[in-house]
Amino acid sequence: MKALVYKGVEQMEFGDVPNSVPDASEHLIRVEAAGICGSDMHAYLGHDARRPAPLILGHEAAGMIVEGLRAGDRVTINPLVNCGQCPACVAGRENLCPDRQIISMPPREGAFAQFVSMPDRNLVVVPDHVSFAKAALAEPLAVSWHAVRLGLESLHPAMSRKALVIGGGAIGLAAALALRAMGADDVTITEPNALRRSHLQRIEDFEVTDAAIGNYSLVIDAVGYAATRSVASAVADPGGVIVHVGLGEDTGGLDVRRMTLQEITFIGSYTYTAQDFRQTADAIFDGRLGALDWVEERALADGAQAFRDIRSGTVAAPKIILRPWA
Image: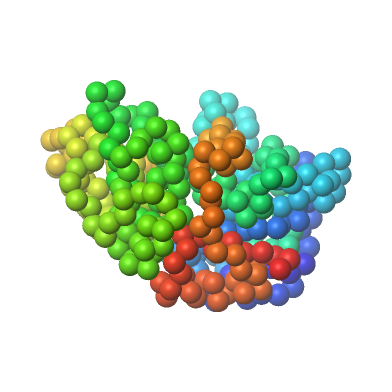
């Protein structure tokens, strides 16, 4: 089969690889759409030791089951494979499973390929009226859905739901959409890239600024750099909540003294639970997350150039979707 393979720092190569072979508990899926994630970019830049080269990246995917009793089912893929038996899994917190695996990290190859194998429980059926490109957004949207849910559940009932999202990429935009779907109607996105900021202002009815102004009850850091953490800890209201979902860099930025004196809650948010993923998929299918027409689609064969374009900051769209069969 054909795949886009990460070969080393800023090196992606499209070519032939061994076929994906499912085990007895898995389905073989013909991948129809796979999104480029920020974590794929971190690996591409050599910043993610969990994703060593050579490796097929990609974990935001949708496609069609091609073998077995479910052949022909259109599905979106929850890429987080968990044990199902540990205390975290039993409690419905599968994202904290100590034995969790995710496609695009060894030992599981990713979805920038024509086929991928996945367990049955990781597949959600996609209605015919939903495109594969939209269905592939279930994974990044679920990341944001989970983060927003944690943040809103942690807000004191007396506080407003005035929210700031730091970062206008796919996770940031998805967080803003999730906030709206969960009843927060005062949402601002801050995005320093003028090209992306202009694009965001055209596609969704959110306030989009180049810098945070004022204070906010809830702050979602969808970038995760020292600079964005510094902004988050400066603009969070006393008693407010910061949810940190970005993985830009490891350390620095938080004003721990202010956060302590003002009793600001800080939450780290990682991926999603199986329930979050299903709820997000349902919200896509019934339109609660908007038109979702802000992606750019390219052939998987052109994926190396897509990575270079994202690296150079010349992509306006929050998400590029790669099509293996284009």
